[in-house]
Amino acid sequence: MDIRDETAAEAASDEAELARFGYKQELKRSLGLFSSFAVAFSYISPSTGIFTLFALGLTTIGGVFFWSWPLVALGQFIIALSFAELSSHIPVAGSVYQWSKHLSNRTMAWFTGWMYLFAGILTVTAVAVTLPLALIPALNGMGWHLANSLSNQWKVALVFMIIVTLLNIYGVRAVALINNVGVLFEILGMVVFAFILALFHNHQGVGVIFKTGGIHGTVGLFLVAMFMSLFVIYGFDTASTLAEETRNPRKEAPKAVLYSIIGAFIIGGVFIWAILMAIPGTLASGIKAGLGPAAVIDANFSNAFATTYLVVVSIAIFICLLSIQANVMRLCFSMARDDQLPFSSTLRSVSPRLHTPWIAAIVVTGIAAIPLIQYAGATYLAIAATGLIYLSYFMVGTAILRARLNGWPKVDAPFKLGKWGIPASILGLIWGGGMLINFAWPRAASNPTPFQVVDANGHLQLNFGLSWLNHRPVLWTVAIVIAGVGAAYFGLVQRKKHAEAPQAAPISAL
Image (cartoon, rainbow, N blue to C red; front, side, top):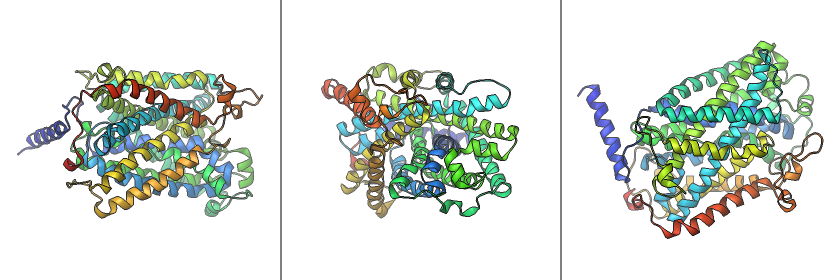
C-alpha cells in the first residue's frame, strides 16, 4: 500500500469514527500532531498572559510569585490528564460540551456548554484588548505617535478581532500554517530573550524567586499573585476541539493536549525567572514601579531591542487570539449542530468551499465586541474570562468523576489513565474548586466592584447603571447574568424540544 492509499484509508477510518457519534464529515481533516499542539499552545500563549499580568504578581508578593507558575501548571496538568483521555474516547468538535453530553445528563451538558461558550467569547475579548498594550508601544518605538489610551486600545482590538475572524473563516489550513510559524517564533523569541537577560543582565541573582522585596508575604497575597499563572495555563482542550479537523485524533489529540501544557510550563517558567533576575535597581524599587516585562527589557536594552521584544509579544498575542477564536467558533458550531443554541440552523452552517463554520465565527466576534462598549482595561476582562473558564472545567470535571464511579470507560482507547483515573478526577476537582473560590473572593485586586474600577481622576471606568450592581463584584455579576439568561432560554425553549442531532451514545459504548 503506497502513501496515498494509507492516507485515504486513514481518512475513511476517521470519517467512520465520526459517523459513530452521529455526525457527517463537514470540516476538513488537515491537521497533524504539531499543528494540533501549536493551536493549543497558542491558546495558552505564555507570552500573552505574562505580558498582561506579570506586574500584578510582582507587586503583590515580589519574586516569590514565581512559584505560582509550577503550582498552577501541576494543577492544570492533572485536569488535562482526564481531558486527554476524553479526547481519545470522544474525538468530536466541542470538547467540554461534547464530553459532558456523553458522560452526564442533557441539562448538565447544556449548561456546561453554555457557560464555556461565553467564557470563551469573553476570553476572545480579553486577549484582543491585550494586543494593543504591546502593539501600540511597538509602533511608537518604530516612529509612530499613538496614544496608548483606552479609546485607542479598544479600536485596535476591534480591528484585529475582525482580521482573525476572516482568517478563521478562510480555513483551518491557513490558520494552522500561521499558528505553526507563530508558535516557533514565540518559543524562540522567549528563549532567546530569557537567556540574554539571565546571562548578561542578572541584577537580582538566581535567588530572586525566594525574595518578597520587603513585602510581608501571606497565603492571601500569594493567592492574588497566582492570577497571572491562572490566566495563562488553560485552553489546552483546544487540541480536542479541533478533533474533527485532525488526522487520527484518538492518538494525536491527547498528545497535543499534554504537550501544550508541558511546553508552556518550560518556556514560560524560564522566561519569568529571567525577567525577575533582570529587574534593575532593587527588587523593592521594581515592585514600587510596577514593572512588567516590557519595562524590564526597556531598562536593560536599547530602544530597538525593546521594540523587537514588543513585536514578538504582539505576534504571540495575535496568534493566541486566532487560536481562541478558532476554539470558540467550533464550540458554537458543535452546540448548534445539536440544536442547542438560538438560531442553531444558521449557526451550524458550514461553507461548502472553505469547510469552516463561517456564521458561527461572525457571531462569536459580534458578541465578543459587546464588552468593548464599556472597556475598562484588559486586567478585569482577563480575570473574569479566566474565572468562567475554570467554572466550566469544574462542571465537566464533576461529570467525568461521576462517569468514572459508574464504570467509565468501558472500552480501551489509545490514551488511558486506568486505575489512576479516579484519583486524577478527585484531585482535579479539589484543585479546580479551590481556584473557583479564589476567583470568586471579593477583593479589589482580582474581583472588584465597578466602584473600585476608577481612573487617576477618580472617574468610574465601569458602570452598570445601577448603584446596587455597582456595589457587587464584577465576576459575580457576569457569571449570574450569563447563567440567568441561559436558564431562561433552557427553560423556555430547550426543555420543550428534542435535539435534531442523535442522542449521545451511552457510557457503556465509550
